[in-house]
Length: 83
Image 1 (cartoon, helix red, strand yellow):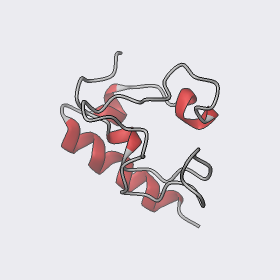
Image 2: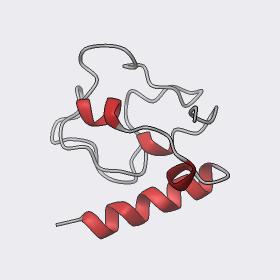
Image 3: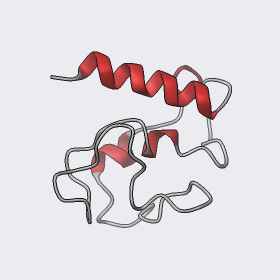
């Protein structure tokens, strides 16, 4: 499956422990500072992109049928895995 154009849910919903340019990491629900206006990642393919971002692959379960569904699914996963 390919990423949905103009989505960026995976760059918004989850927390990310370490993110270049975001001291203390990226909080859940906050768009990453590297998320561009068209919802693409400015770090895509670059060595400084966190491994967790590169390891996250789109799937029907995660992405659902639209951006709102993806945001909801990822937010619930974040809630279920919070310390």
